[in-house]
Image 1 (tube, helix red, strand yellow):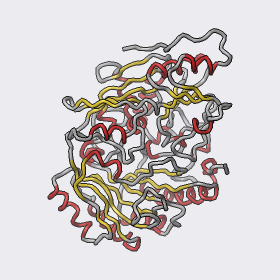
Image 2 (spheres, one colour):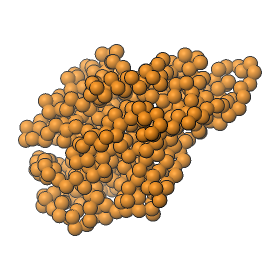
Image 3 (spheres, rainbow, N blue to C red):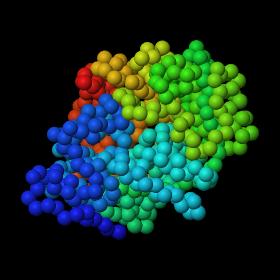
Length: 491
């Protein structure tokens, strides 16, 4: 299917190219001289100082098509962004038109077919709200504020993933505008190679305007968190390592070292406090969940919130911030959690200044996550655990402390790191070989060349070789001096 075309005919003799573009759109265009420029270019992650050539707020696929054609005619690149959680991985946006899809938020559930269609700007909070009362659940992210498209194109780790796999493998159709401005619908039967590439290859191939994916008959799960005093960090982590060795794959959980900030949207019993804990979801009957949790509960948590909840409420489980924040984070996949790894993690993270590291997470992999699903370019993840560490960086001084802390954790754990990373948890620019095996990368590049030979479409993680030494930031062998580009200027 090919659909394209502007909403209106352009004016004759427009004063500027941006005014010409805006006249063809139902959406709006913001340029650097506009008084709303700073708000328009801001990402959810406030440490990303985005400086594109222009920002276009699209309202439908025709707006996206017109914008891509405009940018191509002027020799500019285009990059799509819904929320901007991964904005720090994008790099310099000079010469790039930033397409903000947040106004494209339509969602539609087909309960009979157990599928869902979402537009490019829809977040998981919007989607899960639409599923309430249907008895169906999506493979949603751990935050309701995360955009569905970016999350899914990178793979998509959910609280149901150890039993259901990555979200990308549940995608059944993709609608996207290519570099020539044409809108295509890619499925397993139509444009099959493109369909394969986008599911895990990110936004490198076109501007996605809508996704369709399977949803699952899951009405309730056992979910919550177990929180312990920091003094129990070692005993909890050691038990978690034992517990996850042969854990039922219906349980998807995360070990956490937490230093809660004094944020107003946090419960009183968490605000400003520090804990070690385990949170997650168990997609099994209550009696099975109780049995699975028994070894952790034997450690006598201070707080135990595990209970039966609607599967649509899982987006609030991880207590991710709902408002934009200046955060610096990075992740890696670990191949094991042996006593040596436990020692290395605790030695680098457990005694860290609470003001430097907000969280250190270890998400459990394996189960359906570790089995090739015959899906897209990323249809499973290697390794046993997905680590993510982050801190709040409202100032250059705070940013330097966070970067030093994250680097310390990464260096300590480097001997046990997988050769492949999960792109959604890498918030710096990195070599494409870190995300895709050589044969997969070769195939992705072939698809890219066929649909975007001039390289018009940009994405957070590019398929092309790294060209800047600064992209070593937060790699396993990075030193703090390499990370200066992540330190925000005073504003």
